[in-house]
Image (cartoon, rainbow, N blue to C red; front, side, top):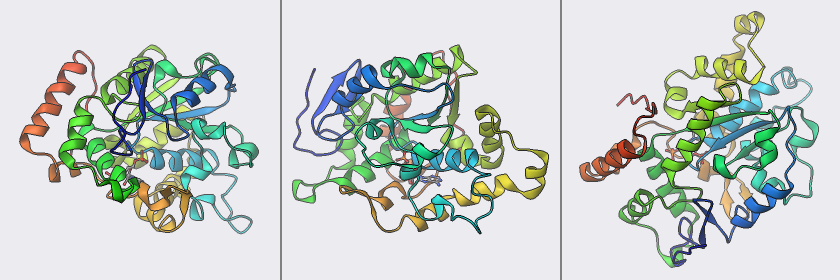
Length: 309
Ligand code: A3P
């Protein structure tokens, strides 16, 4: 295991390389956690897993899938308030990385199918997920917006007394592949390859496509997950309702206050929620460097992002 200097806090703090990817050690999502999951985690064939790199729209995807799959359960809110109106999507749909540490019940216990998320790279997933026949959705976001989102998130979480990361430093790290569960390109490539090899098992989506045409992509997601939108639901505007419930505006309002864990405020997961904010941060040179790396790493692969800017 190779280590990096830890004086900079989140992103570089106690990072370890395991099976070709960087993992943190000081937090719960660590190499030890991945190893523990690899040897003990039991997937069910009906489970649904959402896989992402941090800052790729995980929170949004969690909300959409939770709302889609449980839409009949919360249809009539005379009987129950929708969890997404009172709680973080991270509470409704946990990461397997944190789930193994929990000793209090969550929504997962009372809901079927079980819904989980993970940042673990495809090659390091617990074998039982790969063998169980369950479904997996991967959400990919363009690398420049992931970098920008990570820069802001990292500084929000940092111990201010240790100083903030500059954008140049974050760029340097990111382009060398250094971020939790990075390198970015290898993570994306692993799931992209899996989606080509197992099209019925791994669905590959992009944040950009989801933003441009949320309604049709949510319908696609519903079909893939085995919860297709019926004609009656179509007529009732069910998808539009889910899209609104999970919109940046709604979720960021619900999650204005409170803490997900002692070290993470709920609002840290909501910043701009836009495509192309990188144009406000990257110099032309930085942008060209990332284009070059991406061209080389994704050579021969059909991985593109719709970019309305
Ligand atoms: P920005 O920092 O670019 O705004 P993750 O959930 O993987 O940590 O990703 C966080 C990113 O997703 C942040 O991007 C955040 O604003 C954006 N996001 C969160 N909720 C969203 C929503 N409902 N719709 C679109 N983007 C959302």
